[in-house]
Length: 560
Ligand code: 9MR
View (cartoon, rainbow, N blue to C red):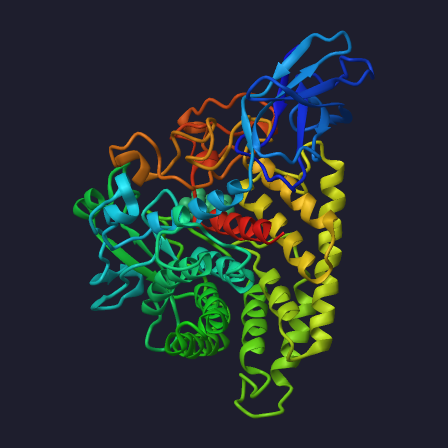
C-alpha cells in the first residue's frame, strides 16, 4: 500500500485556507474507518499543529482513497512540513518543506504575468528584463505573404503579438480570449491592494501598469491584423510545424504566412478591443478610442459575414476550429453595449433605438453561461460584460444572478470531488479550465461576497500548484516539482537549463492525444494523464489562454 500527500508545493497565504490530502493507491479504505492523524513541523523541528484528518472517500479518476487535513489556523509565517501517522503512531508519509507567507501569491502573479513578456514575438528581449532568457528579435512578420488559399497578392505587416503556446503561431481566436481575461484582471486590480514590490516589477509602475503594458503589446498586433474592410485575419503561422528550434532558427528555416479572415477571429478581435476601450481610457485615451473604432468596424464586418469558417489548412499551426458563432456575437454585443449603448445604437447609429438591446436579449436566451471561459465557448464574457455594466440595471441584475447560479453549482461540484475540483473530465488544458472556474468564483464574489466562493477558488489554485494526483506544481520555476521539460520551443532551444518561468503546463488530459510519441504516463487512470516530458504535447504544452486565467485568478487572490 502506497500513501502520498498532496499539497500546495509553493505554500499557503497566512490568512487563507490550508488544506492538503492524504491518498492511498486503493479505493478501499485500508485504515478501516479509523482516521489518520497529521502534524505540522516548523523548520527547527518544533511541532506547531496536530489534528485528525477527515475521510473524503474514493476517487474515481485515480482509484485512490482520499483523506483531507486542514491547518487553516496556522497563520505564522515560516517553512513547514506535514507528517501523517496511522492510529498506531507509525509515520505513513511526509511532505517536503513548503512556506506559509504573504509573498507567495504576489510572486506567482508576477511570474505568470511575466511569462507573457517571454512569449513576445518580433522584438528583442533585453537582459535587463529577460535576464538569462534574453534573446534577439526574430519573426518580424512585417512583410509576409497570404496563404495561397486566399488568392491574394501582396504582403501584410503582422508584426508583434505573443506566440500562442509552445509553437510559433500567433492566433487571434485564442489571443482574443486571453486578452479579454487579462483585461478582466485589469478592471479589478487596484494599485493599493495588488501592490508589487520592486522585486516583482519588470516595467516601472504598479502591477496594473505592468499588466496594461503587456496587454497593449498584443493589442497592437491585433490592430495590425485588421483588414481594410474591417474583417480580421485568423492567424500567422509557419508553413510547416517548426522543430524544437529558436525563433531565429525557425525564421531562417522557413516562411511564415497569414491566413483568414473568419467570423470568429473578427469577433474575438471586436470583443477584446471593446473592453480595451474601457480599460485603457485613462492611461492611453487616444489608443482607447482607436480600439473602440476598430471594434465597431470588426463587428459590422461580422454582421455582413456571419458564418465565415476558420482556415481549414492547419499544416504548421493549430486549428482553433469553431463553427458556432452565437457566443462570440453575444460577447461582442455585450461589450459594445457597455461602451456605447448608453448613447447610441451600434447597429443603426441612432439614439434611443432598442434594436441592439433586443439582439442582446435574444443572445442571452441562446447562450446560457458555462462554468468558465474557453477559446471556443466565449459566452461568459457576454454575461460578465452585462454584469459589469450599469447602462441597463435590469440586465446587470439578471447577469449577476445568472452567474451566481453557475458559481453555486461550481461550489457544489467541487465539494463532491476528493481533489476539490468542479471539472468532471480532464481535457486538453485542464489547468486552464480549473483556473477559469476559480476566476468565475472570484468574479461572482465581487457581487455576492462570500468566503465559500473565495475558499473554493483558492483550493482550486492549490491543485495547480501541487495538490494533485501527479504530485507536480504545474507552473514552471515555482517549486521543486515544477515542469523541467515543457513542450515549449523557446525553452527547449535557448541553451538554458531552466524553462522560461511562470508558464502553466496544460496539465492532466485524459484524452492523451500524444500516445504515438510514447510518453510515460504514471498510471492508466484518467487522473494520471500528465507527464513532464517534451513529447507530451497533450499534457505538457503551455498556452496563453491557460496562463491568462491563472494571472487573473491570482490577481483576485491578492484582492481577497
Ligand atoms: O487548447 C487547444 C485545445 O483546446 C485543442 O483541443 C487542441 C487541439 O486542437 O489545440 C489546443 O490549442 C493548441 C493550438 O491548436 C496550437 N498551439 C498550441 C495550443 C495548445 O496546445
